[in-house]
Amino acid sequence: MPGIIGSIQALEAIKILSAVGEPSVNRLVLFDALSLQLRQVSVRHRASNPLSGERPRIRQPQVIEANCAVAVGAQYAISPLALEQCLLSETALQLIDVRDGHEHLTLSLGGINIPFRELPQRLAETVAGVETVVYCKSGVRSLKALHAISAAVGEGRCRSLTGGLDAYVAAGCLEHLRRAEVGQ
Image (cartoon, rainbow, N blue to C red; front, top):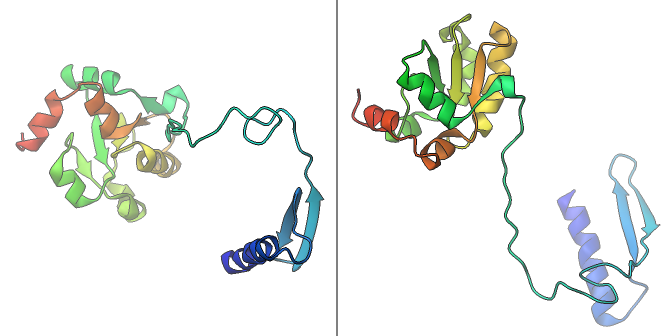
Protein backbone atom coordinates (compact mmCIF):
# COMPACT_ATOMS: atom_id res chain seq x y z
CA MET A 1 0.00 0.00 0.00
CA PRO A 2 2.65 2.61 0.87
CA GLY A 3 4.42 1.90 -2.43
CA ILE A 4 1.24 2.30 -4.46
CA ILE A 5 0.19 5.52 -2.73
CA GLY A 6 3.78 6.84 -2.89
CA SER A 7 3.87 6.19 -6.64
CA ILE A 8 0.57 8.05 -7.11
CA GLN A 9 1.91 10.99 -5.10
CA ALA A 10 5.16 11.03 -7.10
CA LEU A 11 3.15 11.01 -10.33
CA GLU A 12 1.10 13.99 -9.14
CA ALA A 13 4.30 15.89 -8.26
CA ILE A 14 5.77 15.16 -11.72
CA LYS A 15 2.56 16.39 -13.40
CA ILE A 16 2.70 19.65 -11.43
CA LEU A 17 6.45 20.24 -11.92
CA SER A 18 6.44 19.45 -15.63
CA ALA A 19 3.07 21.11 -16.34
CA VAL A 20 1.93 17.98 -18.17
CA GLY A 21 -1.46 16.33 -17.74
CA GLU A 22 -4.13 17.32 -15.27
CA PRO A 23 -3.06 17.20 -11.60
CA SER A 24 -5.64 16.23 -8.97
CA VAL A 25 -5.96 19.74 -7.57
CA ASN A 26 -8.95 20.21 -5.26
CA ARG A 27 -9.68 16.48 -5.53
CA LEU A 28 -9.19 13.72 -3.01
CA VAL A 29 -8.08 10.43 -4.56
CA LEU A 30 -9.37 7.35 -2.73
CA PHE A 31 -7.73 3.98 -3.39
CA ASP A 32 -9.55 0.74 -2.56
CA ALA A 33 -6.85 -1.95 -2.42
CA LEU A 34 -9.34 -4.81 -2.15
CA SER A 35 -11.03 -4.01 -5.46
CA LEU A 36 -8.06 -2.13 -7.02
CA GLN A 37 -10.25 0.87 -7.76
CA LEU A 38 -9.46 4.58 -7.64
CA ARG A 39 -12.16 7.12 -6.92
CA GLN A 40 -11.94 10.90 -6.87
CA VAL A 41 -13.96 13.24 -4.68
CA SER A 42 -14.07 16.99 -5.29
CA VAL A 43 -12.97 19.07 -2.32
CA ARG A 44 -14.39 22.56 -2.02
CA HIS A 45 -12.14 25.44 -1.10
CA ARG A 46 -13.14 27.05 2.19
CA ALA A 47 -12.63 30.78 2.32
CA SER A 48 -12.31 30.58 6.12
CA ASN A 49 -9.47 28.01 6.04
CA PRO A 50 -6.75 29.41 8.38
CA LEU A 51 -3.98 28.01 6.18
CA SER A 52 -5.12 28.63 2.61
CA GLY A 53 -8.27 30.74 2.89
CA GLU A 54 -8.83 34.33 1.87
CA ARG A 55 -7.20 35.62 5.07
CA PRO A 56 -4.68 33.01 6.20
CA ARG A 57 -3.69 33.21 9.88
CA ILE A 58 -1.16 30.39 9.86
CA ARG A 59 2.03 31.54 8.18
CA GLN A 60 4.65 29.27 9.76
CA PRO A 61 4.77 25.88 11.51
CA GLN A 62 3.38 25.93 15.03
CA VAL A 63 4.11 23.78 18.05
CA ILE A 64 1.04 21.88 19.18
CA GLU A 65 1.06 20.36 22.64
CA ALA A 66 -0.40 16.87 22.60
CA ASN A 67 -1.24 14.46 25.37
CA CYS A 68 -1.23 10.83 24.35
CA ALA A 69 -2.93 9.64 27.48
CA VAL A 70 -5.85 7.32 26.95
CA ALA A 71 -9.01 8.04 28.91
CA VAL A 72 -10.35 5.24 31.07
CA GLY A 73 -13.26 5.07 33.50
CA ALA A 74 -12.50 6.30 37.03
CA GLN A 75 -13.19 2.84 38.48
CA TYR A 76 -10.29 1.46 36.40
CA ALA A 77 -7.78 4.24 37.06
CA ILE A 78 -5.85 5.48 40.05
CA SER A 79 -4.09 8.82 40.16
CA PRO A 80 -0.46 9.10 41.29
CA LEU A 81 -1.51 10.97 44.45
CA ALA A 82 -4.20 8.39 45.32
CA LEU A 83 -1.69 5.57 44.84
CA GLU A 84 0.82 7.40 47.05
CA GLN A 85 -1.84 7.68 49.77
CA CYS A 86 -2.56 3.94 49.52
CA LEU A 87 1.14 3.13 49.75
CA LEU A 88 1.67 5.47 52.71
CA SER A 89 -1.31 4.00 54.57
CA GLU A 90 0.03 0.52 53.87
CA THR A 91 -3.27 -0.57 52.31
CA ALA A 92 -3.11 -4.17 51.09
CA LEU A 93 -2.25 -3.65 47.47
CA GLN A 94 -0.63 -5.73 44.76
CA LEU A 95 1.57 -3.80 42.33
CA ILE A 96 2.32 -5.20 38.88
CA ASP A 97 4.98 -3.50 36.78
CA VAL A 98 4.39 -4.39 33.11
CA ARG A 99 7.58 -2.76 31.84
CA ASP A 100 10.51 -4.81 30.60
CA GLY A 101 12.93 -6.18 33.20
CA HIS A 102 15.68 -3.61 32.56
CA GLU A 103 13.16 -0.77 33.05
CA HIS A 104 12.00 -2.34 36.33
CA LEU A 105 15.58 -2.56 37.60
CA THR A 106 16.25 1.10 36.80
CA LEU A 107 13.32 2.61 38.70
CA SER A 108 10.35 0.89 40.29
CA LEU A 109 7.54 1.09 42.79
CA GLY A 110 8.20 -2.53 43.62
CA GLY A 111 5.69 -5.31 43.23
CA ILE A 112 5.76 -8.09 40.66
CA ASN A 113 7.53 -7.42 37.35
CA ILE A 114 5.61 -9.12 34.53
CA PRO A 115 6.63 -7.59 31.19
CA PHE A 116 3.56 -6.88 29.07
CA ARG A 117 4.55 -9.35 26.35
CA GLU A 118 4.75 -12.13 29.00
CA LEU A 119 1.47 -11.28 30.70
CA PRO A 120 -0.74 -13.90 28.97
CA GLN A 121 1.55 -16.72 30.09
CA ARG A 122 2.03 -15.33 33.60
CA LEU A 123 -1.53 -14.29 34.52
CA ALA A 124 -1.59 -17.04 37.15
CA GLU A 125 0.88 -14.92 39.17
CA THR A 126 -1.77 -12.25 39.64
CA VAL A 127 -4.03 -12.81 42.62
CA ALA A 128 -7.77 -12.66 42.06
CA GLY A 129 -9.70 -10.77 44.72
CA VAL A 130 -6.76 -8.57 45.75
CA GLU A 131 -6.74 -4.86 45.00
CA THR A 132 -4.22 -4.54 42.16
CA VAL A 133 -2.53 -1.57 40.51
CA VAL A 134 -0.81 -2.07 37.17
CA TYR A 135 1.82 0.45 36.12
CA CYS A 136 4.32 1.19 33.36
CA LYS A 137 6.27 4.23 32.17
CA SER A 138 3.46 6.33 30.68
CA GLY A 139 0.23 4.42 31.31
CA VAL A 140 -0.28 2.91 27.84
CA ARG A 141 0.99 -0.63 28.48
CA SER A 142 -0.70 -0.72 31.88
CA LEU A 143 -4.08 0.05 30.30
CA LYS A 144 -3.62 -2.85 27.88
CA ALA A 145 -2.57 -5.07 30.78
CA LEU A 146 -5.59 -3.92 32.79
CA HIS A 147 -7.91 -5.26 30.10
CA ALA A 148 -6.07 -8.59 29.96
CA ILE A 149 -6.06 -9.03 33.74
CA SER A 150 -9.70 -7.96 34.10
CA ALA A 151 -10.74 -10.46 31.43
CA ALA A 152 -8.88 -13.25 33.27
CA VAL A 153 -9.65 -12.55 36.94
CA GLY A 154 -12.77 -10.39 36.73
CA GLU A 155 -13.35 -6.67 36.71
CA GLY A 156 -13.35 -4.26 39.59
CA ARG A 157 -10.22 -5.17 41.55
CA CYS A 158 -7.58 -3.97 39.09
CA ARG A 159 -6.68 -0.38 38.22
CA SER A 160 -4.09 1.32 36.03
CA LEU A 161 -1.79 4.09 37.29
CA THR A 162 -2.88 7.14 35.31
CA GLY A 163 0.08 8.47 33.32
CA GLY A 164 2.39 5.74 34.67
CA LEU A 165 5.64 6.36 36.51
CA ASP A 166 6.17 9.57 34.52
CA ALA A 167 3.06 11.09 36.10
CA TYR A 168 3.94 9.63 39.50
CA VAL A 169 7.34 11.37 39.44
CA ALA A 170 5.85 14.59 38.00
CA ALA A 171 3.36 14.65 40.90
CA GLY A 172 6.28 14.60 43.34
CA CYS A 173 5.53 11.12 44.68
CA LEU A 174 9.12 10.03 45.19
CA GLU A 175 9.11 8.32 48.60
CA HIS A 176 8.34 4.82 47.34
CA LEU A 177 10.55 5.20 44.28
CA ARG A 178 13.59 5.82 46.48
CA ARG A 179 12.85 2.70 48.52
CA ALA A 180 12.48 0.63 45.37
CA GLU A 181 15.80 1.97 44.06
CA VAL A 182 17.74 0.83 47.11
CA GLY A 183 15.92 -2.50 47.22
CA GLN A 184 13.76 -1.92 50.32
